[in-house]
Amino acid sequence: MEARHDVLIVGAGCAGMRAAIEAFDAGADVALLSKIHPVRSHSGAAEGGINAALGNASEDDPETHAYDTVKGSDYLGDQDAIQILCDEAPDDVYQLENWGAVFSRTEDGRIAQRPFGAAGAPRTAYAADITGHVLVHVLYEQVMKRQIPAYEEYFAWKLVMDDDRCQGVIAWDLLNGGLKSIGAKTVILATGGAGRLYVGTTNAYSCTGDGMALALRVGVALKDMEMMQFHPTTLSPTGVLITEGTRGEGAYLLNSEGDRFLERYAPNAMELASRDVISRAEQTEIDEGRGIDGNVVLDLRHLGADRILERLHGTRELAMTFAGVDPIYELLPVRPGAHYHMGGVDTDVWGLTSVEGLYAAGECACVSVHGANRLGGNALMETIRRPCRGLGALEHDRRGPAVHRGRRGARAQGAPRP
Ligand SMILES: Cc1cc2nc3c(=O)[nH]c(=O)nc-3n(C[C@H](O)[C@H](O)[C@H](O)COP(=O)(O)OP(=O)(O)OC[C@H]3O[C@@H](n4cnc5c(N)ncnc54)[C@H](O)[C@@H]3O)c2cc1C
Image (cartoon, rainbow, N blue to C red; front, side, top):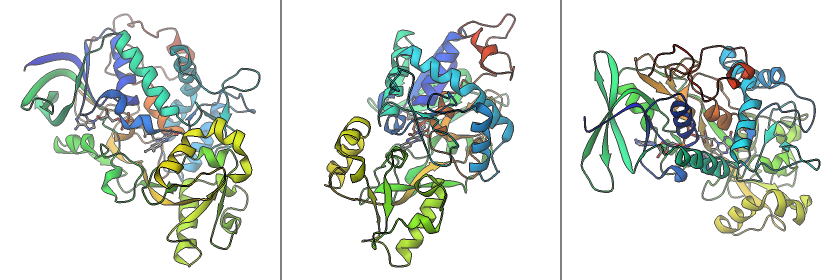
């Protein structure tokens, strides 16, 4: 092997960088490897926000968050995993804030939370409509601060197996050419989604499901691969995402007859129904001839220029750049598009796969906390949740954040090094 580490993380989006920070703080020699520069990872495209029951905007608690997530998953999510995710979420958001994430605020200075689809309370903490961009940069700062090395522009194409366990990665050096073999006691796959399987998608060209393929080739099962989420508001014609935050702020969906057609499909939740419900409703309207050039339209005009400029300025820029329309004055043409892969590398709640030494985290993994349908804002939270077992630092205590908080950054006595 040309290089060796305790922990090698393939992928440097939110999931990869968060895992690197945790492993480093646990005392491991850790390195990141990414086919693109870390801050160009697709996590940076996340707009709407990250879910945690902070209860800042109205009453909320992790139990309600878990209930909404189980229901939103069409009851197919792993309820133990969901409970852990929702219990730990508030502490993880405060951790991000302490690291410097500039979340939008309420009038009295607390972290603001917006309503998202199928959430029982306004639960989505956000930084305007550039949440992913903010989180990627905050995590990268933490990676830099710890001087965690990153193999940038290295394409992982094979896992090294020996003695029935994963021992490292063989990667292609995209800048200089040639192969590099990197040994590791623990390999964590954090390679993101596979949206590029579809023609119409919100995903970047880098989202090609590489980690899933790497795991499958060494015999790890992929789970829930049929569960692909279609987002109801992708901008026509490019597929660029128009965040659910627009509907959280009060935007309407209209058909060619000017009707808020969701009255017929989801009369209570309307534009805040879950994504699968709205996507199917849109496609039905389009198929039955009430679309406009294969789209429906999203109306933000009644929100007013001030609110759009303050909270949705990124959306406005995207709309003007990619569709030539200004949402302050005009309707946005939108349609459903492939957005998020609920399926992925089969792991337990700590990210461990069936192969010793091989873990997976973030969108490429499937615990599953999303079941058949992910709630908006839960994916970023899943990437931020700290992977524990195998990193050797944190006990597997599920009693909640307080237990972990005391040990953050410390190596638990007697815990084995990875
Ligand atoms: C447009 C958009 C908006 C979204 N908005 C939200 C939102 O508001 N809230 C929310 O919760 N979720 C949102 N999501 C979902 C969420 O952003 C993603 O699920 C999450 O960011 C994925 O993070 P990740 O770290 O798993 O993967 P990524 O951020 O995609 O990172 C993958 C990493 O793996 C690397 N990689 C991949 N293959 C290889 C390889 N073969 N070799 C080496 N490196 C490799 C890449 O270089 C990259 O560094 C959104 C998704 C999209 C597409």
